[in-house]
Image (cartoon, rainbow, N blue to C red; front, top):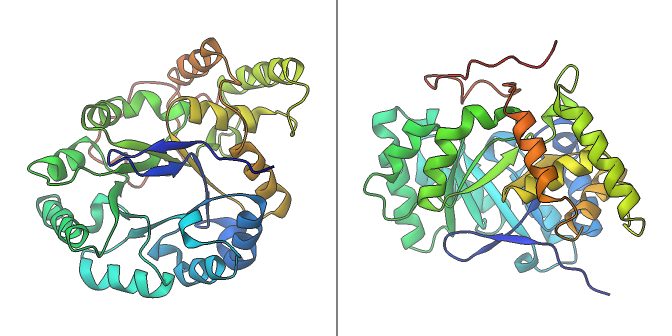
Length: 303
């Protein structure tokens, strides 16, 4: 029996699978073709890459050898430089197709005063059919305001480090995105479990919820642990989750999670994770979002 991955709608109506496999770090970056084929064969239908990862060609090879139509796979790539047209053309050449979504990888690819020009070139390429959906990554409030001022197309997404421990800091960003219909994509969604020294105050909450879900849903195809709950919380928040792995069993687990039905978590459980997360500020990838963007006066949850 065929299965369907839940999707979110971009402002244009284009659908993006809620869980994506990324190949930008760890073993996923080291064996992108092998891991990518495992992901697609397991049922993942969303692949996230970037020029900086140096594996766009591997993504193209993976898609070509997957046995799937490209139309079945949503692919994102990202721009790391301000020489927009040649960089985009290079990405398309390596991939072998126009990516479904193309992002400015960081606002620091250009001076703030020049960021609008970079966005305008992407808009022109979209108008010409050279790109499909366009968006941004690691954009702070001031960066979003620059590209939105007079924009023909709003960014389809802003891909940022998003998890319970960044919520307090991200409030101004999320407010702008809600106002303009910009979808949030999360990289590092599992940071509280994988990178925080202790897991912080949200970890026991995740453990408690995992136990409740397991006892209430004995027919689920996979065991529910803290990782599953945290990813389902991300989905419940209306946020796309992108997570990297090169481990075959873990990739297959991610694929199973991506097909889990809606409403496994209760509204109260989603709110508890959110509320507890907002008592802490902890970010792993600090080079983009913590410059010229005031941090909340919160503990990091390590003690």
